[in-house]
Image (cartoon, rainbow, N blue to C red; front, side, top):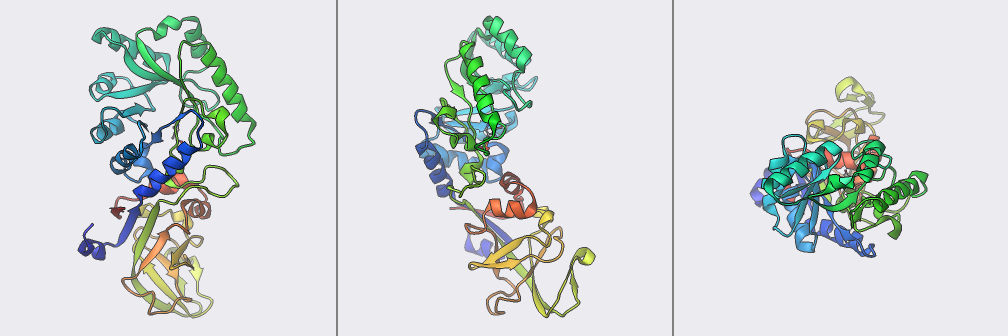
Length: 367
Ligand SMILES: *Cc1c(COP(=O)(O)O)cnc(C)c1O
């Protein structure tokens, strides 16, 4: 990014690809025999799949997961042929040919998807690659109990499909004491023992931290790569990977009794200095942070006061000298100290949502 351009930018999102790769390598080092994939759906959780995926490929990652066929089509040209791009939602009806043409591997989530894939393979005269997902407790995607039963009694339904692995997804992996974890693992293993499939994949980011019993052959971390904490209630071992800075548009002094912003939800109790910063809910800065969130300036916390507007927030910068914060100053809204999990907590949501909301108006800078 040219300096000229950055100087004009109302807000800058800096994405540290090296930190993402370091997080991937850290997760990989926690594995016994499993391979480590990377989940880059939803534009790599808002951080830019076309930058993140090639960087991870350079770090050694060969398996990439997106949600939609369209996401796969967009990403495929940015990766070499020896990298595999999996489609978590599978080939939704009518997109089977797209998957073949664009060299995408669908996760088959129903017998219908499975049969359509088999039929296409027959027509093309080759075994098309896929993975098979079964539901073990999420009740969201994958073969349900009845479909699984049917497949186990009719394994020829898999004939002519190159099934790379059996897959399922954990409900509460971030909670290490949740009993559903073990239950899902038992159901998964039971199905595996009854199917002619040789490899397995169960764990997301948090699942890796449940230990070797949950890692199987391929793990699928997403959030932890991007700095979200994988284990509830424990220190976050992952590096923060983003810095979000907003520019001060104006500062003003307000006097006791003066209220700030839409609906006047905050009123100054003493003489205060307010800084208006050019980031708002239209940028994905969650409105639920109104009167609750914080910004930071050179390590000092600054409370957010008043309601968040579409394009601006207001900060109480009374405690910071005027020669330090003034028109044009850049204030941190997310940084290594003020991480996604803390901001998520203040907003009443999870780090995943803070990330995937990061808006398109930010000037993006990759380092
Ligand atoms: C999103 C997703 C993942 C990644 O989960 P994280 O919690 O972000 O690590 C893995 N597997 C499936 C099926 C997913 O949908």
